Length: 233
Length: 85
Image (cartoon, rainbow over all chains, first blue to last red; front, side, top):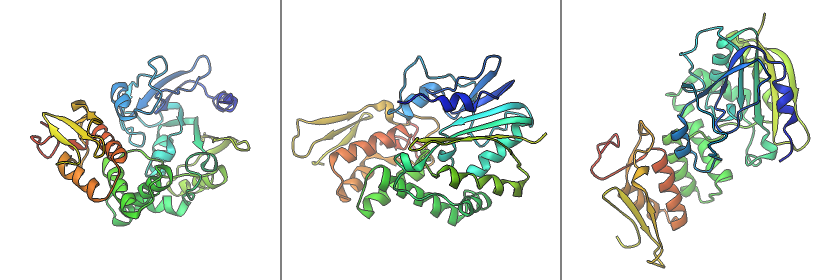
């Protein structure tokens, strides 16, 4: 694996106290003097069971201090964090706008949001289409119980079963899509390139979740890109 | 039950249809493994029968059961609908 220099650069500007969400076995190395707390949906033992394919080396797997969904961190007060870090997380959220609004709520003025996101062209998502901003806005407005939202979420699971798991027959795809959807398993619901991802920040203004440009990174054929944003003063 | 699989005292065993000596045993730890159980849970037998009817290979069936178990979707025969024995 090539050195992840851009990851180090992405978080070089962070200061103070903050959180990394869903670090699991790949915690980011924060600069000296920063205090990071880890947030995850599962405890370490539960995560080992849920994700048997992951690298479960005890040496690297972090122990989360806060057990909560990434997009529902009510346990943390408004304006309480200097930084929020996520790596290969946002694509797993069925409603990324909900997550981004929640992280915006947590950030103090001039707080840093750093998102490391897989580039769909160079991962197992390469055969899938990008999720449009209109699609994300509809997901967010409609909520989980809306029939159209349900249909779209199920379609993401079908895409995953077809293009990632490699099922071909429609009845086979439908079966595994049903299991995926009913379990709530965190597939890559969405996928993007950097250019496809950035318009999300314009859509967020609808909900007064404004972020200022800080830094972006992408490199040819790299499997991930980085978006760093800063909350307003 | 013949092609494969049953749940006995919480242990699911899959038998390879073409080579009965080849079996896959799913640990009872997989049943209701993650708490709370998933909102939708399945008894093993009907889920197995559905996979057979759909014509999945044993390899896929084993993968599906492993997945469902790890996600808290399988319930033993004596469990209630929330997957609790």
